[in-house]
Image (tube, rainbow over all chains, first blue to last red; front, side, top):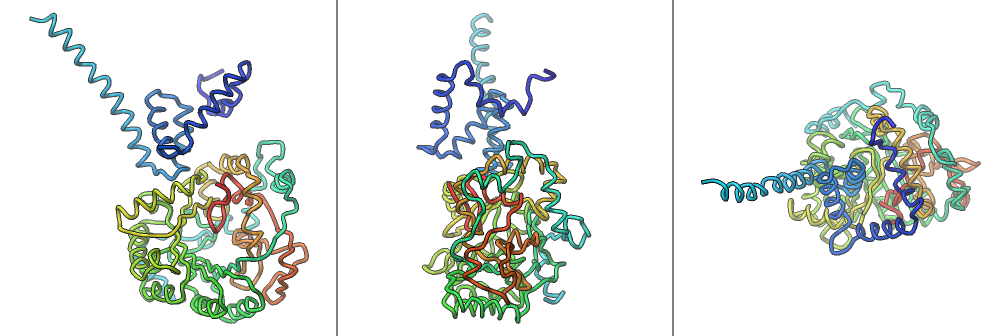
Length: 110
Length: 363
């Protein structure tokens, strides 16, 4: 194994059920239901998935949901805005913890 | 078509030389077929289209009743879209003569084929276009014009919206996206703004708003992927085109890009050809294969030759297996029982939700 991540590995995901078939079946059934059209459209869910993929920095998911978003008619500008939403939440999450730093500093400081 | 008219029609758009003008090897249909055939494709059927049909119980693929008489009037166009399967453009000269158009109408009159679908190039630029529309309507047939939109703005073509409306022609227009960047990337700089203006003119004469004036938009992927979710996309497009431009239309079709001609060139240059063909083969859908358009369409070339579809026409694959191959030999009974000529490009119509001139085949 030369690298931890190989694009070809994404196609092996469906075989993850080996050694634990019933659990994988439950996962894939649930996964399919999650992404079906519901109160949100499949397209909206796909864009959310792309944002989360960046937040959790999963290259498989980024690959899969970029393709899925393009197939669902999103253009690169729209996909880029999704990534900025993910980045803003991650950046904002770091920054908002600054209030904890302040709490500690305020308590200890004179 | 005079050079002046062509120059004026393309004036506000960025156009590039066609494969033919550049002398590209891909201008030759045999080269295109060979480039697809030589690819090593995975899977136990090795990318053999007929074996896929066989496994789906559809081999050999046969036509049924012909419902669409599709006439490709030529290669002349005011645009040079990057994905064009026709290699159309302002530097092409092929155009159906009035004699051939008259022969096509005499043949049509002998049948009860309900729909005449006129395509190109920009079919409106053909010397035979208005005659074909008028005569098909006189024969009581439904007529479709496959329109690139910007031609409606070109000098000497500005009366087209009124002409089309007067004859209740269904207008099926290409627009890759409801936003500018993707549209201009695929179809040339300036096309998006022209297309929106043309849609406004179509709306103004009642298209997309009045009964009998059906306006359809067609989107092809801007890249090496398949379209999906036609119905959901249609709802989004209707909302966004209304919100951003106040436009109305009746339906959105999604059409898969066919790996031939200029799109094949782009696939090769961007090193996407192998993976795109794999995607098409892996996405083979028996449900879509059952409904492919060649089963209810007959395609007529600008010189009167007969083909199973417009893609076979561009690859110069005429109807085969002992069938009449020209309008002059037209025999409806034989043609409605014909075996369809297939090759690897046919995976373009059977992948995923399927693809046809009427959009997806199986959501």
